[in-house]
Image (cartoon, rainbow, N blue to C red):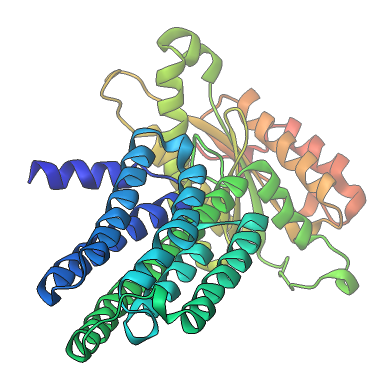
Length: 395
């Protein structure tokens, strides 16, 4: 069990797919050669045939160990393995095991398969072409020089073909299945990695909410001219809510940045719960301790209610490390449909947020609909925010 765990740990630690293929192909090849060696003994083949099979096994085993002990040498090991098989070991084995009347041609095919699988780039093309020509020439040479071939009895020929067919069939099947599974696992891992990278590109790492870039991408879609809008996102019933954690700098200085990060993360989680993504809503970290939510509501009063519920939920949070601490937020709300330009809407919601701050904090200030009637109404909204908007303030 311990050996199995160690092997599994070692296998998981291999990052390169090519290296995994090399190890697996080498191991499968060793198993196939071991079986061929046993069959050679059972068939009473000439000693040189069993010796050639044994040498092939030792060759692959040594290269397997070298690759394990020195992973950086794996590209060289792969090249030595296929060149050794194609140019040094298999041709003598072919002549020692009966030539064309035996199953050695199948081992030739397996060796060419290994060449195509294990090598990469220009080396694969050169070695594969050279091996194909060299092995084909050995077949040609053996046909015209039969005296070089150690003949087998008819029974030995039959047994050798059957056993070699089964051995190479199992080996090729196992290698193909493993390689396809390995590529499939690698593809799935890459898909997960791409998904994670995609998520990181639009999400803030600390809060888990959307980041500023994604927030403005979505807001820009709202304010694109109708002729340019590929994805129609309705502005009616859409509200921008900007929140800010009250006295966050003091909290950081008093309790430390690690606790400050915990506060940011927890507040962000609560704001994330306040939106309904299926309705096109989102919560984003605007920067520092500021957050922006996009609500779709029946009216600004309904959006106000939802924002105030989020404010109250955060006010009632309790902190294990600081049980007596109360964290509060302030916020401002504007209606997107009352603005023709995003910059003006963001300017006004920022003004409303600071109106909430200046009027006592821990409150939400919303826009007076009468104060903003067109794109030039931002001065009215700002003036309204500066007065405190007493009838539109929550606490």
